[in-house]
Amino acid sequence: MTSQSADAVSSSRRSKITPEREQEFYDAVCEQLREHGYGSLTMEGVAARSRCSKSTLYRQWKTKPQLVAAALRAYSRTGLEDIDTGSLADDLRAVVRFAGERSGRDTQLMQALGHAVLQDEELRRALREAVVDPEIGVIEDMVRRAVERGEIPEDHPAAEFVSAQLLGVLRARPLLEGCDADTPYLMRFLEACVLPALGLARNT
Amino acid sequence: MTSQSADAVSSSRRSKITPEREQEFYDAVCEQLREHGYGSLTMEGVAARSRCSKSTLYRQWKTKPQLVAAALRAYSRTGLEDIDTGSLADDLRAVVRFAGERSGRDTQLMQALGHAVLQDEELRRALREAVVDPEIGVIEDMVRRAVERGEIPEDHPAAEFVSAQLLGVLRARPLLEGCDADTPYLMRFLEACVLPALGLARNT
DNA sequence: CCTTATCGATACGACAGCGTACCGGTACGG
DNA sequence: CCGTACCGGTACGCTGTCGTATCGATAAGG
Image: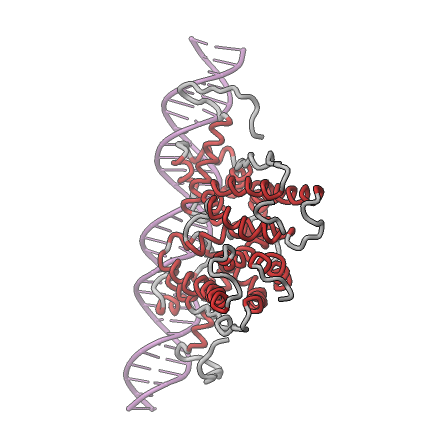
């Protein structure tokens, strides 16, 4: 995961809040979020899960939405930005491989935030900045590069739907079949639908 | 449990709970659901919206989840079952035209239920039976008929994804672009992605 | 070694929502 | 014309959670 210095003050007792400790809070938030949803996420629950007291949470963050927003902002997804294989198909295959692994966690998180996002402005911004925009931006960049390379025409009608297709299927399968959209499923979808629609046959 | 006779005691004052009155309760539930989400749906709110008292609600339904489940079951979506144009492409175009109109309402409802569905078994069943299965079943039947007509091969790799694609994009666009997936958008998607992936070119 | 600041634990007030109980009014059935 | 049963309104108890305040303990710094 992410860390700066492996300073590891992992002795018996912690003193101040190290970045690692902070991340533990955020992890607890995400876990509670996935397990019980935003509405049933309680400060007591987060405190218990991260073995701290409510006081500590309220000392650092003013309210529950702010804590959740902070956790979302810290929910980093490094690993996608570096993909640049030189072909759109392979770029997307790499995305799918990556997304399949986090599929369960990410989808549960989105699902959990669901409607809370529509009520709290800060939460909505945090979710967009932390989860939506990065993944979508990366995919759109891939498409842009493919256009520049001449792989697909600039005005290809399917181009605008690539990210929506992937994100959509990612979230639709749990609803339809009750199981996560894992990598094999996403890969089949990519080869059977996304690439053909883009005019990128399998062996080209 | 629903209706007995269209007795229509639509005089000035209502005595017992007519089917129309019952539907008003359900409408109020759905509206509260869309507006505030499941967690913030209150019995007081439903009562106020449908101009009845909490007592009446609790006399008819034992608890809040049961009321919501009943409302979902009554959330009928007739209109899709009758589509059978003789070609898969036209069938899907009809679906898209229909889905685009209800897009906003349906999506908000799904979004609102989000995580509550994972906690309450009855709610999950109600949602599947009332919203998911009907739409998906209809689409899968369309694909089946197309296979029987020979429009597409039985083992076409894109066939399994048709419903997931449509449902997915329906729910992905609000998240990505912040606006509903209306009919024009869905139609563009259908023509640009779904049909090409199925090997059904535009003018065939 | 002593001061200080922060952490963990807990108790507390405030508030909102669920579900119940009661009470008066009003339409139906005989 | 009268009893019955149901509806609407409201007050109430209960629970759970937010956010605050207080207190002892413990690690950092001089």
